[in-house]
Image (cartoon, rainbow, N blue to C red; front, side, top):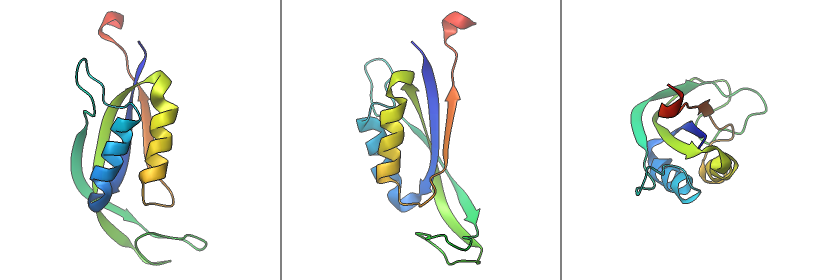
Length: 108
């Protein structure tokens, strides 16, 4: 079964909503467990440019936001559903999203 890891960064206040949406869409299934994820907290930094509509911050000013990095594994055939769930539940205009292909133990 082909698996990927999906990573996104979200303000701490919205992390649980996004994490649940990802799990409801099929991410984080490990055997008989579901909605499995891992999070780390950090500081996201950005400057909104002209034409941006930031959820947090002001055009042209450096912003720092306490965020969670949410990581989940996901079957490759569920990736589109999970990405849609992230986009629907995430508060940012531009959503940070990383997808990594994983190899299984049988490929070692």
